[in-house]
Length: 480
Image (cartoon, rainbow, N blue to C red; front, side, top):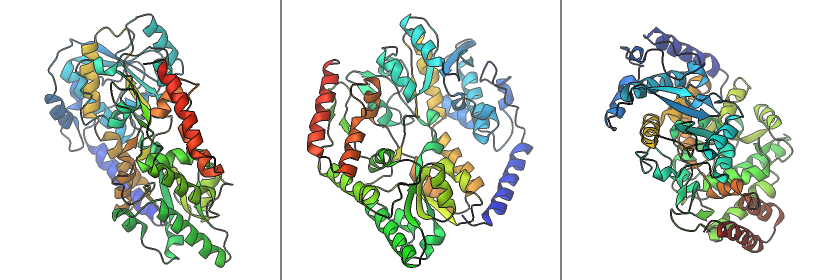
């Protein structure tokens, strides 16, 4: 990023803030007891930045129901999905209007259960569910906690919840597939619970790139040429050029070790470990030519190439990249905030595809992604289904939109960066193998281990595949 971007972007952002604050915007309530506005009618302000009319339009197409002031209770370990920094951010203000429109539509009060936002919430949900108590109307938990509820049979089948619209386009299709086991689907996700800032992207040093006879990276992405082969080609070209000039520069740094990079790049390939259709027994399907190609490409790039540095991870990788010591940095999108004013020109692009035949870019969700579900004991499932569906419908594209807007205002100035961010975060990847592996500890997320061991150590892929297939079959035998 160019040094003079900071001043111009700050002025742009300050102007935007002044413009926004000059509008008649209601005060968003503190998070004490409830997520709803003090007076929902306050949201109906005459402002171009007020989105309440948009939400009203979305909700007008949904079922009409008056719940007569009933409280809609949300149990969550992350209140930011509802309030987002207690409403102080642009996204938080948007949540205000969304919540107000939903409350008005159904005559309800949005509230949090008493342990929401604390580590105790998962235990409380499980205890109440197993006792058959009516504790909450919607659960929003990170997958690491969500697995616990699924493993202890504390969740309803989301397919049985009335009015949930599980086939609607405001849900991420792969999330439902990932949490389905036979005829039970434990959870679902959409932009309502999505965190784009945690998605891994590829930052690149524009100054280093300009010194090499290589095509523009933005054009490479736009022309569907940005794949793992080109990642290696660019990395080794810069590495060799820098070494010839006596510079100590790498091709690639990353904030995560190789074992985690396997997950990131497998997800980016869009390939599935498992065929996991509703009502059928899951089966592993990655013993194929594409997987062998992936292992070869990953090994060449991250395990065999001297252009990749394995000595710097996490914060030291960010510091090294910011000092101009690498062409690429693989890290979460939020890392952009740490690169401001670092003294080098930089941009970002998506994690590369496996090859040019792949149609979309996919973004990796680690175990911190959030799922929505419903606890056993929920008394009014119609209420839960209608209101939960409204949350997802009115949140479609919301987190992605504001992630792009916020990062573009604060850290970037090129229109290319907005396009690249959209490509990087719009198709989140959900892995059923990882979900099942967390439920049953005897069958861990060993598929990723298989890929890494095969790529890094040359371990026999066929032998490991047979071993893990037996482990999965043993687990599934207890379910079917």
